[in-house]
Image 1 (cartoon, one colour):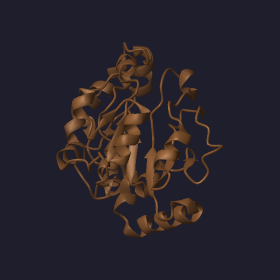
Image 2: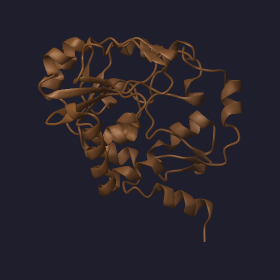
Image 3: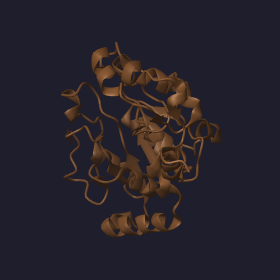
Length: 265
């Protein structure tokens, strides 16, 4: 049983991505995915995409949800999480948290380093009175280009922190092509899309849906536009239709459903 790491079906992966610049061979994808008896998904609405990506029959795709999302529905845990981070980072007091969580770029070697086109000092100058800026790089990225030296009490590299905990903490998400958008949408908080290299990414990976009409939030392509969007709070909470399409269940009980599937009475 494959417990896939992401909700929804956003950027193409597996067999769906074959032929794009950032793709592996059909033989590799077959070896990687051929032994699954079932695949867990977040929604029945994405069975077609998962069937294509994994080359598996749709009836073997079970829309039971992501087990780790129990945290979103546990009030005691959410309170603990807030207290933990605000004690760890005193700069958070009386300020909003922007979580910047971009995905990786390039092949297995290229993605180890990530050239992030942001000037943290400029962000601090424009946003530092009201916000702190948390940077969570993708686990496949070993090193980013951002310099945190002169941005104390504003910008923090939290790449070693748990993404689910960071989403609970954040007041706003800034991302690009990451599937983290689906989980964050459950929280009813705004998302901004910093898609400065969209045209290149379409050639590298592409998406299951047309990016610019699908994403649940404003798209900006320059640092100046990003700052303006944050300052004017352009982002809005994700609409309910997007959430309903990508989550059959919204209850934090995915683990129980999976156990029941594996060990029925």
